[in-house]
Length: 40
Image (cartoon, rainbow, N blue to C red):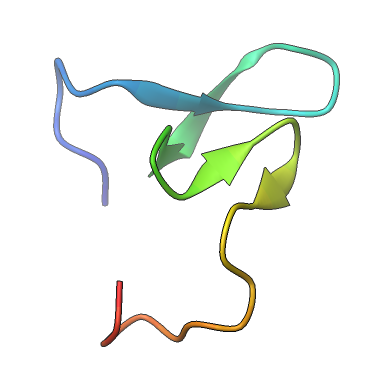
């Protein structure tokens, strides 16, 4: 779960993601889809 105050990722419609940070999720896509949760 995302912590309050951290930079939010964005969904495809440019709304803010409530689940993911901007360093791993932008424009509705994962920035590094080849990595799993342990590697991020």
